[in-house]
Structure formats: C-alpha cells, structure tokens
Length: 278
Ligand code: ACO
Image (cartoon, rainbow, N blue to C red):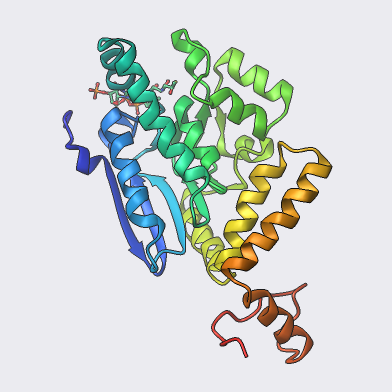
C-alpha cells in the first residue's frame, strides 16, 4: 500500500485510561509524511482533554517506531511546491511535536524499532521513553547529505553529552536501545517482549498521581532546564501557586492522609486520590 488515507496514518485506542497512539505506516516504516503529521495533530486534539485519558503512549505499528521524515512526501514533494510548501510541512510537523511536548497528560514513548532523524522530535516530546533493547536510533541525516534539523540536533544535545552528540551526528552510526538508555535518550531498554508490560506499569504509577500536579511537574522539568537557578526558583513558586488555583484541595488531602489519618507515607507511596477531601 503506498497511498494510505490520511485518517489511517495514525491509529489509536484508549484502554484503562491509557491512550495507545501508533504511527501507522508500517509499510513505510512509519516515516512522517505531511498527511501523517496532520492526522497526528488531530488525534492529539481529540485525546488531550478526554476524561477517560490519563496517560498517552506513542508507539509504532510494525518494525519501526518512526524512520524519521518521509524523504519523498515531506522533502521532495513539498520542496516542489516552493517555500510555502516547505514551510507548511514544517509547521504541521513541528506543530504536533510542540503540542506533545506540552501535552496536558504525561506521555511515554514506547520505542519498538527504528527511530531516525525527525523521529527525535516526538521522542523528546514524550516525557518518558522506554525502548526495545534492539531498537535502532540514528541521526542518519549526514548519510543523505543534510544536517540533523527539525530539532534533532537539539534533542541529542539536550539528552546526552557533547562527545556522544558530535559522534552520533557526524558519523551517522546507529546506536541500539541499550546504548540509547546509557546515553539518556530513553529511561530504560529491555527485551521486546517485556516492553509493553513495563510501559503499562509506569503508566499505572502515573495514573495514581494527582493530575494537576503531574502537568505542573512535567512542564517545570522542561522549563527549568533552560533557566538560571534564581529564575527557576521564582518560576516554581508561581507554577505551584497557579496549580493550586486548579486544584487547591489535592495537596491538602495529601497532607491530611499522612498527618491525620496516617494512612500512607509520602516518602514511600502516593496518597489515595479516590478518597474524597474532607
Ligand atoms: N522516507 C521515505 N520512505 C521511506 C523512509 C523515509 N524516511 N523510510 C522507509 N521508507 C520506505 C522505503 O522507501 C520503502 O518503500 P517502498 O516499499 O515503496 O520501496 C519502505 O519504506 C520500506 O523501507 P525498506 O528500506 O525496504 O525497509 P527496511 O526494513 O529494509 O529498512 C530502514 C528500514 C533502515 C529504516 C530504511 O527504510 C531506511 O534507512 N529508511 C530511512 C531512514 C532515514 O534516514 N530517515 C530520515 C532521517 S532524516 C530526517 O528525518 C530529517
């Protein structure tokens, strides 16, 4: 199949409050075409504020997570439309990665196979990432004659050190999931048959947490990495006060269950969200 309809380029289902979103062009190793990028934007719109979604997992159908940008449809065909075509394609791709970086719910990349170039955008956009230990990660841009753009160089430089980034980008050599974990591209790598269970277990941990605190925390981690200490200190005070305006009772209930009820210890577990605040 070479001409998959836009609607079919992304698949998703919601099971037990986890939205499983899949790049769905396995016959093209899930490379990102303008149609896929448009569809992904629409899927994120649909899922972001649904009450039955607490965590989003992004994975790939078939042997790839994503083989990066579609060299034919994203590069060659949009370039043929001139600058306006190129810029529109960039907006649609970068747009959904940005949406995902600041998504309302925690997000997990479940990297099941190939992850190249432009794929680093959504990889970084996900808050957490777990990989098949045999997945292959590559900045292959140098192999076909461009620099790793679209944020890919920034992603590598943000997640790992200078020498690793430089070697990875200049040589175009791939690394496997285990090395990706050692470099900090993903949280952990494991055999393929253990991957989904691990992601489900992490999602279950997140689903038990206060959702307002989760959103405030994930944004804070991204923001403070580019701030001075003093700016971060100030931002974090304001961010907590803003979070309180959405959920002023959650943290009070968390304190109450520990101090008054003695029903849990925050150093060892999470407070019970299901118990009504008193
Ligand atoms: N762009 C366009 N088409 C692609 C891409 C891509 N990024 N990746 C795979 N495809 C297509 C192939 O052309 C092929 O199409 P066809 O069936 O019509 O011939 C089909 O997907 C299957 O690909 P194969 O190469 O046959 O699959 P294989 O499993 O042998 O290899 C691999 C997988 C290694 C991922 C290979 O497809 C590949 O090198 N892809 C390109 C990876 C890449 O460099 N991406 C760009 C990164 S740079 C950036 O994103 C800016």
